[in-house]
Length: 156
Image (cartoon, rainbow, N blue to C red; front, top):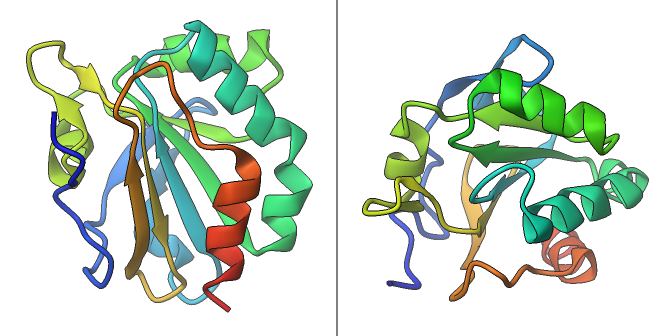
């Protein structure tokens, strides 16, 4: 498994529109000029590490908002599953369904044999440029919010 994504710092982030757990469609480029975006690719809803990761984002939601950063959790789960996952765990961040795996492939996070995403992080700045990426070597690992917030603060 490679530690390198299909996007690298300095690249323009591939734009996308995905169905959200709220039922609306979310387009990445609507944030250009207004906020940074943290794309948090995760393997599957209702799994232990994914649950703790997304609940931690909720716990620190105000810190990310204070850093003018929107968080989107992205997985290959269907939107209704993500809606149930979000409701069950009171997750504050919007979850996006990449059911067709197009965004995961564009960003290079898809594990083709397993047909779900690796855990990976992509920070996109207000100009739509990828500023930082990280891929977990093991599915059971995740970045801590303090590290992600430090990367976001470094954008200023």
